[in-house]
Length: 59
Image (cartoon, rainbow, N blue to C red):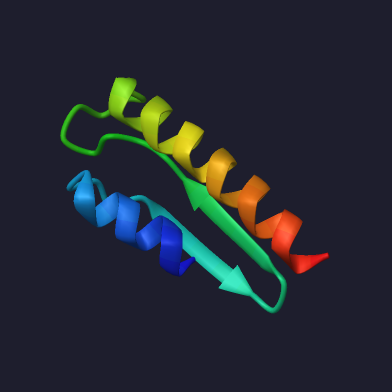
C-alpha cells in the first residue's frame, strides 16, 4: 500500500481503498470527472507493476 500511495500522491490522484489483513481493495475513479479516465488507467498499470514486483520479493 505504501508504494501505491506514493505513486498516487505523485500523480495527485487519490483512489478509494480499504485493507483487511492480507487483502487490499482499490477503487479507481476520477471523482472530479465522475468516471474512469486515463489517469485511472495509468495508476492501474502502475499498481499492476508494483504488485508484480512485490510478489517476486515476497516468495
